[in-house]
Image (cartoon, rainbow, N blue to C red; front, side):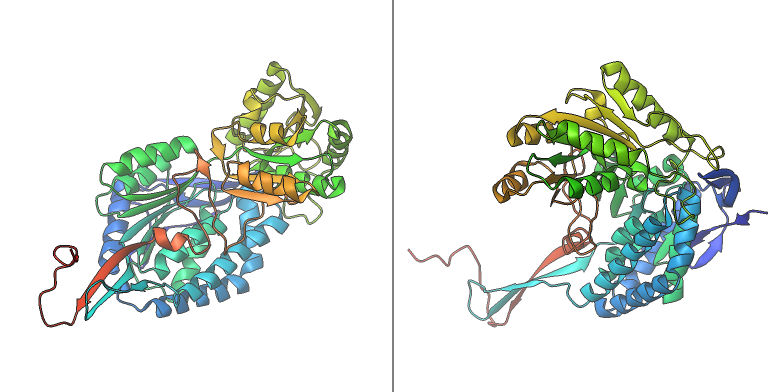
Length: 497
């Protein structure tokens, strides 16, 4: 009998008002049902938002260091339950244990970082232009935050959003991806165990249309943080603009790794294999394009093909597995379709290229790690996000051409260059249009205390992570204290002639 899960609203676990449910299954073995979850609707959203709105009035008055203390406890509990959560995550979304452990660790790091920020929500004091007057700007919480997250990092990304929201004094309604609702439930259980008060965090399971968009359009939701596809992000931006909500969007990517002719090829090889096929290529920062200098193109391509063919596919719970399944049948079909498109456009499949078969793979959504050679910058496989284990390889003649190709996409999230020439490295840092650039490292590997996000259609300018995210979850309030005992009029009649 599959475990039955519930929403968490106003401090209590409950079924959806709709009475409907959906199943969560293991993508490595579709016969395994992880659990059943409420297929929620607008009524559930209304209850959750009302609870969050009510709780905001008391939560905003809790001193920020005390809010941080609760998040410190959250980090401690995540540490205690790391292996348990990692195994659950692998079962429900497929990536290997090495990565799901890392996913939980990112949540732990974020918890401790956010806890410390409870004592560092700095404002500013500046001199007044008038005597006996004090000027300052302080941060204040905004209100109810709608948190809408994807399935590929079901612990890390929610913590990137929820923890800063809470430490800043906001309350939360959390809508996780329907492919990873169990991990989201684990996080909610930990938040409540750590002492987050009733109504401050609320969990509503369900689909993007009925739950996600209901949150975006809700008049009592003050800010929305969303990670997902660019197309959905644009729709959220449009809907939220009607009520002038603050919105943070972290969207798609088409990330490139450049390998110059002077690069350490063995190091670059490790980087591209990890960047392209880690998480089965299902990262917004995944290495989707490999841009090779013509002098090393044949040699390096041969190296990558040889290693990619040796990667082991299978159930991510097995320690010797390198690559897990696509998250669901639809995602596998998308990957298969893009491989066909690439071949039709003239690319050559030099590794993989099809759905994987073999022992232990028949009941899952596995696709072979795939490499497409002879790709040109204008091909769809070089421009569109695939979100799967497909690497497009492009030949260039110079650093300038490599950067031009890297920038030839609507996205601008992550980027990478392998070179031993410091001048080339700094030119790439300056000229690549991306929110993140790695030098001699793959396009994946974000750290919790650094800003995360991109340019162009990768987002709308806000950043997750690091110190910058706290600007999103707070309003600046300017305060003037006049202790002169008389009316003083700034900027009106004080200029000397």
